[in-house]
Image (cartoon, helix red, strand yellow):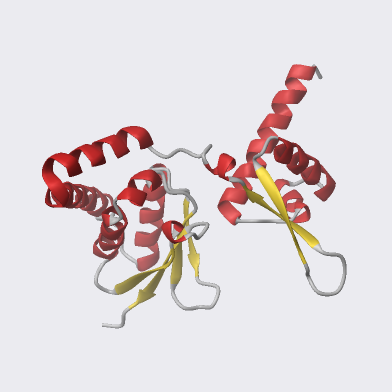
Length: 219
């Protein structure tokens, strides 16, 4: 194998490591190796290379009896590799609208976006019957929009979880949290009146991801 081919292979493996940490959160090299179908040592070598590049960092934690473990997490530089949709342009537009039309004008923009998004989601989920069908459809839509979404039955048995491992509009949401407010309202609308939805984790509050708890409401 040529050196160029080997370098490309290593680069692709490194990107898979970054994606796994982005999707699943901080992990040990052994956990990453298992997820990637390789050994923990191979994963560790990839992590060391990514660390040299400033993309991951290790935190040593005590796990009780035995040797301390190293948990690898993404750095800010690595997080910036995942797309924030047209961040600079969006921020410029928000600032321009706020300066020209004030908060009331910005609120009108957010409301118009909410109504447009809501209609698109409702139309896309028109044939989804059960709660899980609706949740799967919503997850698919959000994944296509760049949120790296996934859903599951809650581990504690209390409803379902919709998890978004990435926020492609994070820059906009940081300067105008109305975007996050409307997302929660849209989810409630498209999922229907037979469920309740609450946000348990929030990227803007410092969490790794946004996580929503969906519960069935008995009619």
